[in-house]
Length: 155
Image 1 (cartoon, helix red, strand yellow):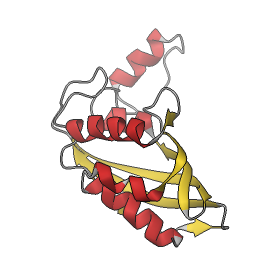
Image 2 (spheres, helix red, strand yellow):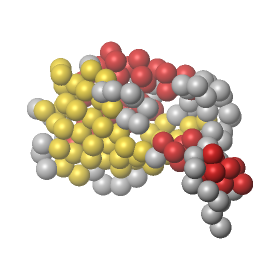
Image 3 (cartoon, rainbow, N blue to C red):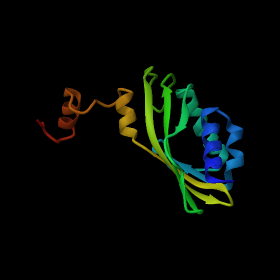
Image 4 (tube, rainbow, N blue to C red):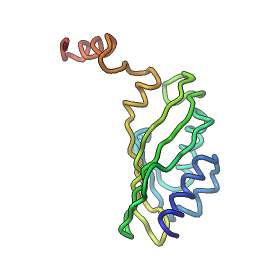
């Protein structure tokens, strides 16, 4: 499968909330990780469980490509953005109703035209700030948090 077809199918599975859509694009020894996974997830069933939790928290989530996919034949990366409204609990965070846009890079090792290992990189602190879990930069809340962490006050 060509890298564009591979990532198009990957993004369709995420956006379409289609657990079966992951099977044809993932290799047998598939592994996945992102900033929300405490360790690498092994196999498509573990990825599907993770995806279902995210779909529950962001039921309108979708993944859109944002640039050219790059590959050298063994490794590939795809820039994208994830958009969705926070309507369900995720981790310890209750629903906020906030709409978030998360820019991400999906980096993958390929095996026989399928995804073997995938790492998604995105700014988890930025997402926490958009959801209101963390204070915005430059606010009194940020200064209070820095003070509590022992950094003192900044101008």
